[in-house]
Image (cartoon, rainbow, N blue to C red; front, side, top):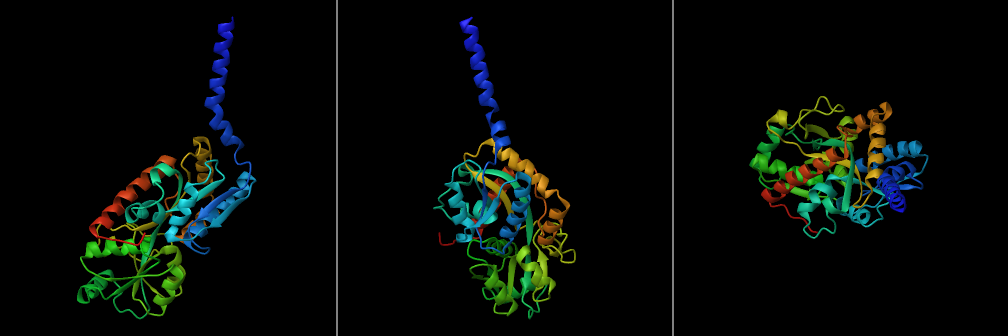
Length: 326
């Protein structure tokens, strides 16, 4: 009888243990949640984080706060979140810079993408836009390649910083076109765009979110999109693929991730709820405005996506001999 009681008690304890993640996920969140963004307010990462945060606040009946921790193209924010408690109170709006480019560009990176983060959900993928200053006469990809060939190392391309998505898109362009060009790093998209509009620099592979208002106002010229398909927000601008660059795809992407020991039950709940948010018609409309597409899906989809991006950009860094200051 005693043995049977012990077995029953052990079975009950096991059931409680196995069921714990599900119960934990149902009770969570029981306090404010922070989504940390590695860039100042006003950029694409910040904009998407705020769209998601607002909807989740309503859904969870808890505050979801966007916290900006800019620096080193998003790497400082990733370092910070990697050290936070894995209780679901702190999440990262992961970014191509911190999760795909930094691992190959910064050998002394203080975190491991695979070990120190739990991928939760891909929020969106945006093309970059190859844009030209308003005074440029070479405004097709073919003509820009010819200009770079005629003036090697002199045609200027701005970026939001060394090691940024814009910088690596330029490096991919140089490799495929077999030309040299002048990389001009800035401390963000704001000063880059100001100089481009003022014709202090000639071109940039700028993020679609930052470039769109200036393209639509005519202050800069849209030359090409850097995804295989045209974004809904720019149906008239051809892709690099359409202009002779077979397979050229250089995107900026965003997704939620948690610290490395985030319980599966919490990660699954956030994944389900963010998928619900991304399917809302008003959110879809906002995402289309930003050029953000292909978000949502499983945690595994996001994990595999990050792994493929790390591999792709490591090759560009190696082949292009790209180096940045750590």
